[in-house]
Length: 260
Image (cartoon, rainbow, N blue to C red; front, top):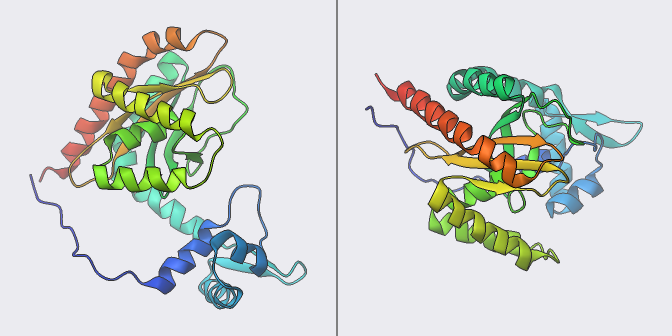
């Protein structure tokens, strides 16, 4: 198998890092953000935000609304997302396999990776007959600490990374953190024993997830979910083997991409 090139570590470009933080501040439901709101969301000084928003506007990643005196994401951001999706060899091999299972069992199937302290969907195929209250699409973010996706990732992450991430999550000061931390530990035990975990953090939604770990790749997490009145135990029994079988198929397909 050909060895993957891993670039040597270099000092982080702080200006670029801060500029990306500006773009990350935009979330669904927040079309326009002024410099003050961006400063509050990023923790950057108003002067730094002003300089960065001007640069990002010049580059086409932000648009300035002079009437509202605020910024919205520019077309350049959409172009990057499109390039990522259409150029991803992982999605090219995984999506048909995911689609087949989603249609066959009339369930939802997703593939996600970790991004900061959240999981972001690379692909989401929704075939469950009963729709949930949330609309999950590619690019949708969900919390690591609450979801089967996130807890499966934490179980698979390397110790230093996992410890740092859990410490950051704990610092959010959630009132229910002891309960959440126990759920994370139970999911880790389930991954170790069964290679999948289950979460029911949304009403009537049961989700199972399993990590896909491949050397030289990020940790991918595959999940299946349904919205149903039936118990989580019933759906676990129905879905855990199809989930694990699909994960094995996707893992093999990704490994094949590395072959010369």
